[in-house]
Amino acid sequence: GRKVIGGGIHPTVATSDALPHFDAILRGPAEGAWEEIIRDLEAGELKPVYSGDAHAPFARPRRDLFKDSGYLRAGTIQTSRGCHGACPYCVLPEHAGSEIVFRPIDEVLDDISSLPFPCFFFADENLLFPDAANREYRMELFSRLVEARNRRISFVAGYPQFVRQLRSDEIALMARGRMQQIYLVLGLKQSLACDLQDNILIEKVIELKAAGIEVMASFNLGNDEDPQPVEAGIADFCAATRTNLAEFIIHTPFPGTPQFTQMEDEGRLLTRDWSKYNGANVVFSPLHESPEALLNRYLALWRWFYSDSNQEQVSAR
Image (cartoon, one colour):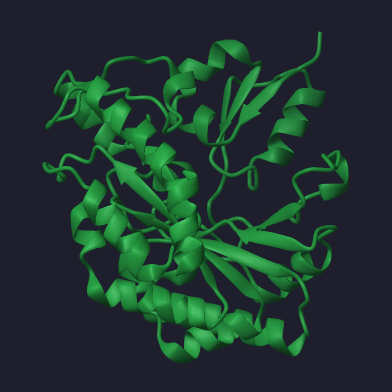
């Protein structure tokens, strides 16, 4: 008997799939549409689909509405909305717009200060983009965090092409602003084999670690551009960078992305069971091996990396 409105990435990129389960769907950001939804709800005229405005002012989240799990002790901070990257595997432009809209830094700092957690995750990969606008934004943001004597530690995600272009002064500033970890996604923007052999990237990861910023490596498996096994390259990369925290992801063509449409047109999708689209199942036909072989390699890499013998080698290094 309650009205239920679905929003977020899944209802945005798969609206027709989600609509039967809700009274209404909100596509894109809630800002720019929520007031209209409330008015229509009160008037008994709720429409089936609404669209938010990527350029609307950012709302400050009501974290007091969420129950503290007692386990997940980290917050999430949004610094921008949208992306101009148009990467074929990414849902972000479809969900949040095809250009980057920056959140005012004063609002970001205010949001950080309100967190009830000792650490937080910057939700926007473009925080590490190498272009002038994003570099200027992050330099000001971390300068302000240093000035405010921020004590909360932070984490951010980034791709090799961005990490390899971080300047030494930027790394030093991020470390002073309490950045403590970069979640490094390898094998998406280009083949995993290329990322693993990037000596500049390896040197930059070592530099980050020396500055006190750890790197968690996420290895994407099953990319069409990786015809050869990459296990040896992963082992060499981890040894060279002293990586002690990693994850392995099976490449996943998400609905709402150009890659999903391409694989659908090619007849390569194996299922539309969205519960399997989680990076731990093979949902498409790989170009260079069977789905079973890819799944077995994925499982073997997890077992190898977190085996006692490998962790002992990491500790010894």
